[in-house]
Image (tube, rainbow, N blue to C red; front, top):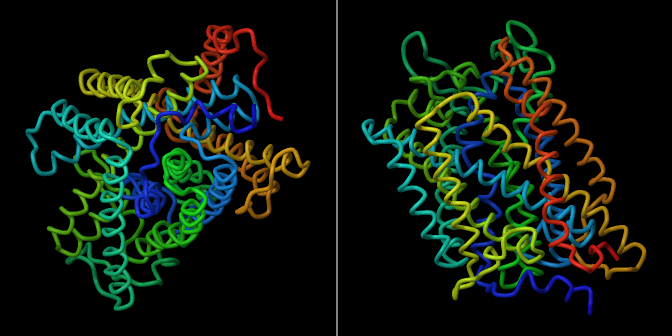
Length: 492
């Protein structure tokens, strides 16, 4: 049995139906979601203009992550992605942990995204029952995912077109306003746009007093990491791409451009337009998108409505990606009997329907419980989903390090598109992720005087050990079935 044949079962039944334009837009749109359209508001309000540096640093880490992932994909494209690479290089135990962590991450995200849709739909229909909006959102995205991978690709393509289009329009308008030193708003709240806002903002470029801390831009990197989450989705989509050897490198090379323009460029323009304190304001207890705040100040109400619609599409896109990914991850787990055998079943169109339906059921239950019994416990569960991003990124870096060791020893063939500065860039990435976890604990502790409101601290100090315990117990429950009478698969 060849090295590739050992993992061929994971790919049986899938169809290579994702083309160039879909892969390109999945790569571009993967990082553009509610983290940028909405989450950047609170970070700007609490950090100031120096947030730009936070996005630059995390953007560099994200670039090296994608190059590490690209090397893994060209070694062997798999719809099981991180689960499959964990199985190949570290064995079934690592695959079990990786798969269930990623499933938990996207499932918790899938609970939050339709909830966000329900909140923003009330912008137009205040009396719309939240539970009904959640059901409609899940039904639409579920229908798309059950059709085919191509249907998923088409949904993500057009969602990405809309998201990218909205950002491009904002950047063009913003640059014109900054270059022309236009005044935004009227009366006492009016403010003049300009590059000088970078240092004339309250507290200066890097605020350190009056409620700000000098280490704020450093600690906030933990939050910025989650704004980039979803960038790794390309690893799953590559398994159903027509020509991954050709299309994946092209998609990954665009990472630097989209990070520089869509994230760092957008934050720079936002800072130059209005004081960062404006972006931290809430309306009716809900965070307002910084894009909406700008167009509202300009008196362009209809454009603010368009941005609200784009935020809803971004949330739907996140939910769509979650169902797509978890279905494939559960099937990869199912092929080794680490998940119920039902998850391995494929539809005639090459879709792992059982896994997608299972995730949808959990998302629906969680979202409804959120509306029936709102409280801190649910919010802490959502914060816990962010740990999944860190652990999956860590697995990608670790797998790339192991792959490079094996290729350098001549045990595996050397493929093109090798990650630059590897393996040292991957070691640095792992170190950065450890720093992020520590930053979460510190910032979480400082976030509130009340213990149960210190969500990130609770997630790190109590959540990670609890998750580790559940995974250990889960592994002992399934290990005999997974391993059977054969030795555990290990790296070559």
